[in-house]
Amino acid sequence: MRTKYIASSSLIVMGIGFLLTLFMPQNIAVRLLQGGFEAGLVGGFADWFAVTALFRHPMGIPIPHTSLLLSNRDKIINSLISAMETELLNKESIKRKLSQSKIFKALASGIFKLIRKRELRKTMISSVKSIVETMPLDKVAISLQRILAGYVRNKELEPIVAQTAVSIVESQYDEKVLDYALDYGKKWASKPESEVMLGNLVHSKLQEIQLGGMKGFAVQAFLGFMSEEKLGSLLTGMMISSIDDIAKPDSENRERILQEIRMQLTTAALNPNVTLQIKSWLDTKLTNPSTQVFILNQLEELRGQLLHKLNSEYDNGGRLILTAFRWITSSLSKQEQLVQKWEQGILSLIGNIVETNYYRLGLLVKDNLDQMDDQTLVQMLEDKVGNDLQWIRVNGAICGFIIGILLTVLHMVV
Image (cartoon, rainbow, N blue to C red):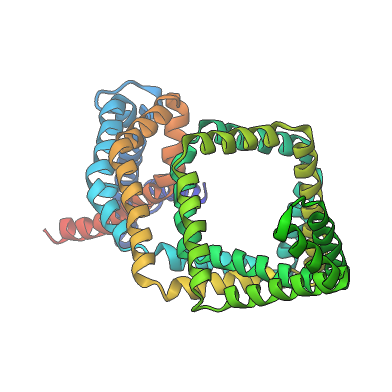
């Protein structure tokens, strides 16, 4: 608006100056000024007409080849869209610019600037805490139970069971189970009450044996010689000795037992009936109401632990967020190939989106321009470039004034 006022003022000055020189005593100085003001008035008025004709009809008169922007509205819009697509925002330039982008560094830098603020970190923790507190764990427990039950029903367990059997053998879990059983058996046999129990049990069973002749005499003689205490001590001693022998890594008996365990394990893994029994057992367990209660209790416990950790971290100002972020960025910075692969994948995806939807940019621009009425469009263009165009009028008046003086001098000389 200020430049438009200056331009109008320059035209008025030229007009007033020309009128004043008409009534002043004629001399060389007045004639020079008159020539200058006259030419400046013509130049300023001509440039006013030219600038105004771009946007509207001068003085409202529909003179041909005026109001050029509105008369050529469609051509201008199409030219603008074409220039944008082919020159300003062509697909190749966008892809080239994207290929030079460093997404990881830009994101890392931007995120770090944000999370450096203590209040922002505390706000993040408060938001997470609010979500955890209001999470309906009863519904989550029901969903988890349904998901697990559905997974078991629809999943073929044969490969899993077979792979589990192989993993048990490869990881030597069978030996660990055997060692655990042997250790437990040795501890049990070493207990005094176990010795008494075995002695009484075997002694009573031997008394129940009904044999005649020499065999019966030998059994009775043995029972008379061996009391319950001695018999129990003998049996537990034999058990402990046998367990120690089996526990040795190079024991042949140990190897036979392990081979039997592995054979039975493989046979069970390949038996369809065993798989069906396992699947049925799992399905029964997972659909049982007690399983839902168990899941809910575990979730409640987990929520309590998480809220406690969040409260502690809130009091600490969210330092863990900074520590975790630094650890992530440090770890990724050491994996340059992996980061580059991710970046190329993201950039390729963005490039495909641009390739597929690029034409929408032109449609969006055209749609926005079509929604503007003539007055709004003219007003927008005047706001953007009108101020600079008004200087043409000022320059026209000044240049006309100078040229007018020069022409007057030339006329005097000639």
